Image (tube, rainbow, N blue to C red):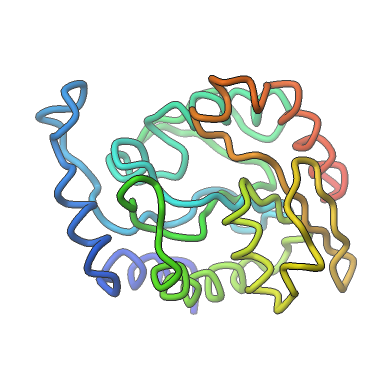
Length: 219
């Protein structure tokens, strides 16, 4: 399967009834975006198809990626992430907007779940259902050498993908685990508003992990 075919199949997915209902129910419910067209489908990954570094998040935000159709775009998570990607020399501009000419250099963004979940909390069944898409998508990124998990759920989803025991690879900010074949698995607190606005995750903390991931990827 090639990436265009993957994207076409993914965006037609309706495997999880709760997520299908929620991604459509939230359309127009936030005053700031009332009247706007929403993507309201599974959100495919975005970035360099020859990426050596994969940033792996949790799920689309109801009024962020679920609205714009691009990972980490349209909400506070993206407002935090994209300027740091630019500062690290990994993107062509510090902001992300649907339809712009933004390019990521050697980086690909995706998530463990491709549809917006209520309360930003997918169930185990929903994570398991979306893991089939993870297997295909990561399999298409043949040059990937470093995987940066954003949050505990993302790390555990990657561990399941690689067939690794969760107890052997605990989550903590800045975790670094070598993988077979010269690859690496890193972890960071998620770039969510709950972390960045409370001071749990600062710009300096995330940039340090991002630059380490960049160096390990040889970018």
